[in-house]
Image (cartoon, rainbow, N blue to C red):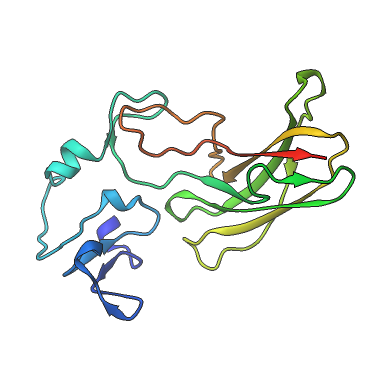
Length: 200
């Protein structure tokens, strides 16, 4: 049960200071592995109930609605995701020289990451697109809910525009999709990460 999990917190302080109103004072519920919108800010009391609470945010606002590929219902667990942090968009990288591609990845609900993969797509000509995903080096996370750093060493052989793409997969086999799963409010957006660079 989520409320009784030992990692579920009632938070009164952040970074050693009393929690500010914009962050949920006097008390905020923090449930690792869940989107923050799923849980309560400005908590002034708590009581046990026998059915799900039907407040406006839980029953009307923070919901997957008109979804494709996701059941309609409350927004809860964080979806697996990766980001590319290096190189930055529109960076010029040298042909034949090793370029370090780096990023961060995390998984939903404390599920460990299985892998991060990277692909370099040559954009000018689909016939010469570099196919296939390559395994990145995945670093261990700082804790069960923390992100993991990853890196991949790429040596481009042709000049021109490239798109670097990363995708993470967790231990349950959930993988970032090529396109975000549609829902009317845009929640849980976790498509593959992309950065465009130019090889010179």
